[in-house]
Image (cartoon, rainbow, N blue to C red; front, side, top):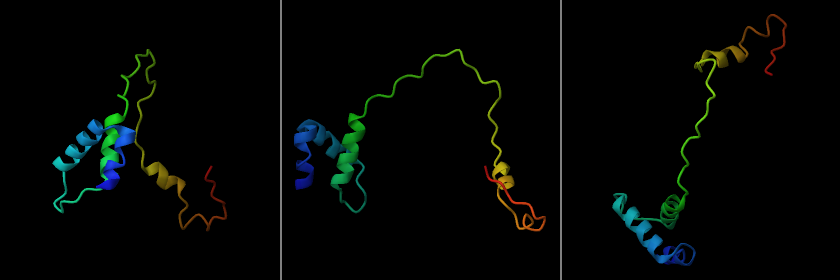
Length: 90
């Protein structure tokens, strides 16, 4: 509890009270809370609001396509050493 009170001079009493209330609302079944959890909630409360996305006239010329097999093609296989070629990764 003393560690939570030690945060008051930096964040303010009202902010700490709000953070503790939020932590208590979502308390784990064990019934314990930690100062790290309170600090985390305080940090999230004090985060600046994310700005809206900027308007732009840029458009994609190619649609992004997921190709997970690409990584398998880059990885050396057990047959690579048979043909005597060195595998390049760059």
